[in-house]
Length: 284
Image (cartoon, rainbow, N blue to C red; front, side, top):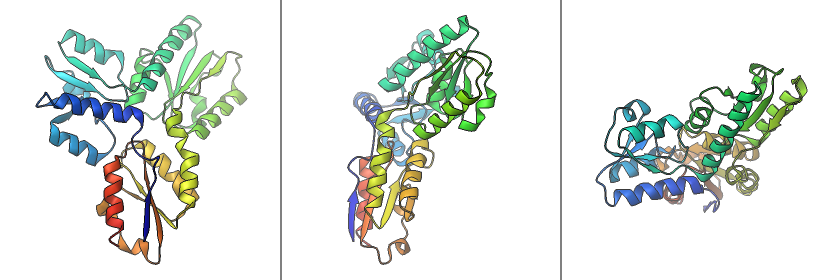
């Protein structure tokens, strides 16, 4: 059986940067706190935990003093930085540059909307770390929209500016924009496509990749929104696509009569994990 790993799958720049900073810090530190999981992949988190990275939640963070804490690629709201400043916490800031730039744009837009009785709209997943950081730039005033059909939650009589979480679907963002345009009763509407193209550009590539094989194995973390978005892309292109989190999830009966298998993954999937899955596939 021929097994090929997609060369364009795996960590994006933001995740690579965060993991690199964690590994570098752990060379001189026995233990380092990470505010939230550094990446939405359980096995990569476990690998870093064995090196000394300890994941904490926000409740735990707001009880710390005099220590070092890693800010992961998703970014954080201003309240995190203020608490660190007041409590002698050294932050190793691994926020993705794309996310940091978006935070700045959201903050500036929020200040402008405050002056014109307008609204900032964030298209994103409720509870996602990046979205929490974005809403924090607006003093928690932003309106969070999770689906294109939820446009009715916006006051369509007032000015508004719309941003997107960096990993949302481009098509869904376009649908939301159309819904707002069709129903808005104000001329003051701005749309900012802030979806990361390093992520969204993987869609056409994966469509092509998935079409070249009899069967696709998609490797991703169960809690990664990006993984589920990209797996759906594969599934639509190739019905014989299977989602696995590790090599242990593979089932031999999937591959009966199959001669060509493609292995791919999310922006949160480590290369070593895809290689491990491919290695086991070659044993079938």
